[in-house]
Image 1: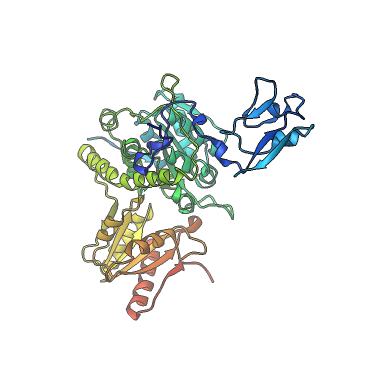
Image 2: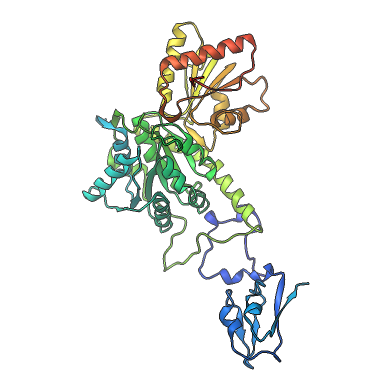
Amino acid sequence: MKKRKWPETWQEVSPGCIVAGPANAREYLTGSWKAQHPVWDDGKCIKCGLCYIFCPEGCVRETEKGFFAADLDYCKGCGICAHECWPGAITMVQEG
Amino acid sequence: MAKRVGMEVAIAASEAVALCNIDMAAVYPITPQSHIAEHLSDIVADGRIDAEFVTVESEHSAISCVAGASATGARVYTATSSQGLMLMHEILPIVSAMRLPVVMGIANRAVSGPLNILNDHTDIMSQRDCGWVVLFVENGQEAVDLTIQSFKIAENKDVMLPTCVNIDGFQLTHMVEPVEFPDQKLVNKFLPPRKPYATLHPDKPVTMGTFAMGDIFPEVMKAKDEALKGAKKVVLDVFAEWKKMFGREYKLVETYKTEDAECVFVTMGSMGETAEVAVNELRKAGVAAGLVKIRLWRPFPFEEFRAAIGKAKLLMVMDRAIVHGGMGGPVSVEIKSALYGEKNPPAVHDYIMGLGGRDVAVDDFEAMAKKSLEAYRKGVEKDYEFYGVRG
């Protein structure tokens, strides 16, 4: 059974909307907010890691081959990685 | 029976807090609340109670500090007035949304500007919709009794909401009144230690003050609204238990000579006692006057209010605040909404009076009644009036 993220009805809301347990922010997939997502062109990427450093969400990771990719479950599509990528290896692509 | 003592009401309110086995208080002094802050600080410093008194740097910090402590499971108290309450505003709806049973004393004072330190109800009225239980007291004894009862109301498992006790600044806080303090052992019995729903503790971590967007936020608001409305029953239960243990009876809406009353004053706070004298004077002059005093302002006791006014044909509402750009004062607006849809509702005349400490004496109540009765008998419609304003 799929685990429910939050109460369905107002009667099920815990007093004060308290969540029983710590470190559950990861269950909230902020990736649903984005209007654009970043796409890497590994041919232009020089593996400097600036996208990894500047990502305010901390969702850019290094791949096995040393290139970079975003975890789209959490990427909000802000475009900071594309803005900072001076070799121009990252393009923001419209969702949908 | 406990001994009656003469005591300044602000001091008496902090003595009442001292009876409640609090764990901590954070109170930033502001006129006319300062004596509560100072005396409670003395009580803690003298070691009379085992509690922390946090000397915060502002009211925003005071309310934030007690909210944090309340989240750990502590029993907490704060108090403020006017601009201090304004500065707390950002945190007030958070405390109620987090369902933290903070108890706050408010020494009601006008809000700037112009700068004024004297009494009216503008401070609490501007915080009306923050989701707190709001009580008004009429004298020193009520300030003591309702402060103690507030902890029991706030901490009830079906309520878990912050509760404030409104004590008119100067008119009450600075008066020396006869007060009977309940026995500590009986208070302990009446108010057992708090049993928090959840606490911030590393052994059993929980997340408080969560993030909620449109997919859950409205459900949380509905749950809070239901909790506040449900608090009325608990307030009634607590009043009943208080009467049983301490003998003094409290009602959500108090009545004075309303049985056969044709015209009825509606008051909140300390002016109720003056209005009682005015009712007596009017009755001597052959006017069937009565008085209704609202004690529980939030949640508003609609049924009890409608029952309290009886068969009165004319209500004269005393509003110590103004809803700018609206239709009179906040009490009359509430009452008109309480009467909407009723068959043959009474006429509601609203008087905005006593602003910024302007005295309202027995003569003034009589003058307002005279004005209202004249208008009523002539069939003249009357909405609201700034009573006694020159010009």
